[in-house]
Image (tube, rainbow, N blue to C red):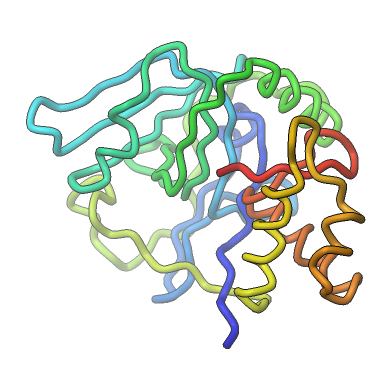
Amino acid sequence: MNQPQRQTAYKLWISTLLSGTYTKTLGEWEPNYLEVGDKKISRVNILAPVVEKYIKEDKTYASLTLDDSSGRITVKTWREDVFLLEHFEVGDLVLVLGKIKEYNGSFYVVPEIVKKLDNPLWAKHRTLELKNIYGEPLPAQPPLKEATISQETHSQEDTFSVIEEKVVNEQPLNFRKKIIDIIEQLDTNNGADQPTVINHTRIPREEAEKIIQTLIKEGEVFEIHPGKLRTTL
């Protein structure tokens, strides 16, 4: 049985994210998205230090503000999801995978995964990675430009109206899990060697390579060095 994939979680400078055009779609199953260049981005992968933290006294709302030196963005949770943020503190380096949302002219992220990274070199690695992909970060931009507006009336801050994302490119769940498990087994200190991972999976090489690239795009796996893989969890 095939397992549908989530939308790609794009790695971006925060300033690049803030400069995009946000579109609220009319389709029931189409996710809202941020248009950056030729990409339509529903999910993001951000690595940055926490510079502000807030938890409401009754623990119905929590937020972290992240700053990657190019700009700032807030990660927000409500009710049963507050636990995702409550254990982090100002100064922590965190990796956040989540959905990009907009309210009242501002972007924010609704997190799916939040992980503390103890080694500060991950921030340097991400900076070099983004410079290689996008060049130097853009200057911070003014509030977003909004495109098509949904017919839905938003009386609150998209608080409880998370729309299911359209899924694409199905792949077998057991293959994906097998690759992740093998990467974790082979990764000691320097990452797992990609050809060795593929050999251990006994999955056809071309298919295994495609799954690995998909896992990288989704933010489940990343390269600490070219050809050296590590999981984000």
